Structure formats: C-alpha cells, structure tokens
Length: 359
Image (tube, rainbow, N blue to C red; front, side, top):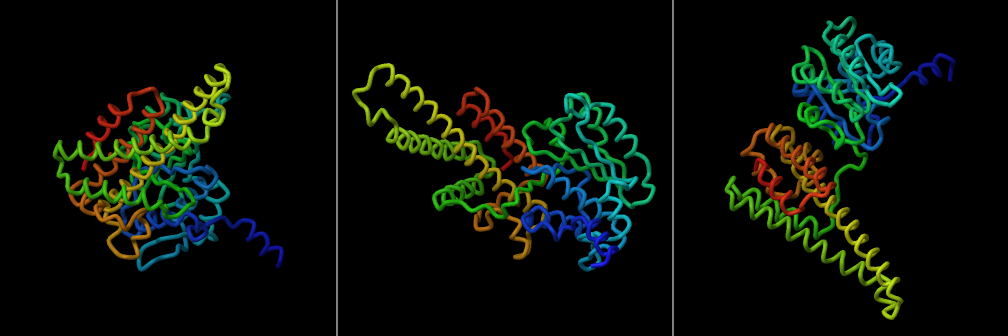
C-alpha cells in the first residue's frame, strides 16, 4: 500500500453500508430518503453514543455527498470519499454543527443553543443541507431546551436537526414530541418466547377489533393486567422456592425476618424488570403500527423493518389512525415506563395511559 493509499484509508469514515447491525434504523432512513420524506428533527436512541454519532455523521454526509450512492434517482448513501464527506468526517465542514455538553457540570447550556440556532438560520455556505447534531440531548438544561423549541418545531428550509441520547427518558417531553425517534440497538429483529408472542398476538387482535369503544379499551387493560398478574405470580413462586426460608424452616426469628425482607425485595425487583420488558414489547409493536402509518412497509422486502411482521392486527390498527397519533402512542408508552419507575399506583397508571392511546 502506498503512503497516499494509507492516508486515504485513515481518512475513510463510514457509510450506511458499514452498519450491518443497524439494518432496521438505517433501512428506515434510506426509505425516507428515497421517498423524499426525511423528517426535520430526529431523536437517535441507542446504548452506544459513539455509534449514534457515526450514524448522524453518515446521514449528514449522505445529504451533502458530491458522488452519492443512488437507488434509481434517489440518494441512499454517501460515497465516503469526496471532499464533502471528508470534511464532515473530520468535523471541518462549515455547514455541519456539533453541540456537546461542555460546561463544568457537563450540561448543554443556553448560550450553546443560541449560537447553534444562529448558525442554522444562515444559508448553507458549501453544502445543500445544514445539519445540527446535538450529542447527549438528555443533558440539555431546561432553559437551553426551551430556547431551542421554536427552531426544532419550525426549522429553516434545507436543515436537519439530529439529537442523540442513550437515556431517552431524561429528554424533555417537549423535545421528544417534536422529533422522529429512531432506536439503534444493534440487535436486529426482536425474537420473543412463544408465550410472549401468543400474548402479543392476542393483544393486537383485541386492539384491532376495538374501534375506540371504552369497553374495548378496558378489555385491553384487562388483558395487560392479567398478563402482569401472571408474571408476578410466577416470579413469586420461583423465587420463594429458592429462598432460604424453604430450606431452614427452624431458623432464628432474626434470620427469618431478614430472608423475608430480601425475598420481598427480590420479587419486586424482578417483577419490575419483567414488567418493563413486557411494556417494551408493547412499545415495539406500537412502533410497527407507526411504520405502517408512514407507508414504508408496503412490500415484502420492507417487512424486515418490522419487529413482529407475523402479528396480524398491526395493519388493521394502523389503517384507522394517523402517523401523528401512532407516534404519540410511542410517547405515551415511554411516559408510562417513566411513571412506573416512581412510586405510583400501578393499576391506575396503566389505566390512564391505555385510555390515552389512539387505537
């Protein structure tokens, strides 16, 4: 390899084709590019913020690439070699702006956002699109977020705003509701145990037949509560059977009391974990509903974007709600998860949330 070839290799970043573990999110972005339906504001969510940065950088390169990869007449990826791609990769492009937590308290402050908004409202100097990437959006101070809301809601033409976070529950609701959320987990399609899949199919069929009636909504809540009660009973039985209380029935009272407290705490912790998993399954299904409302999963090839393509009720629900309502459903489930992490009454919180769903 020559010195020049080595230099070019070192400069090379990543294109969408270089994210094999993020097929769902990348495919959704590429279909949006193909259809000319790219959102103005995105919230990229994932466990690895560096991976999210690479994906945001790749989208910025794709939008401004001088020799882009095309599918038909539509741009779907960057070349990763042209002058624009290299400038963006090296964070030297004047139309691509990055904001990171920089103060001593590791938060994003109002002055940073005001400077960003001033830059975004200027016309692009070299590129077709101006792109702003906000790293660790959960670190936005309330004042900084509020200053940014109007720009996020009505960004100037030819501008894309991308917010990155590993903790979406800490991002302000006013910010989340104005962004199109994409989750990048590096796990591909989610595989469920047979019992979970059967429950989800049953839940989706109830939702599909519900037609917005109050009785139907309470049937949905009853189905979820029955599943949660079964989970708790199973956890109680399993952990109780393995507790020292079962092996040392003649133990001293202080040990019995200690083991009882530990068992109670273990049952509650495991129940909360499995409840969170179940609600995440429900949220993943609602994401499928949302994708159907966007019209991006019409062909068999597009089915790979879905978490649960075998669930039949999904499309029926999507046909009677708007994309906006479907996105609001995702926000409602996320809010529900946050509430359940606090000391709220579970049944009442579930009831309030399920009655809010647009189904």
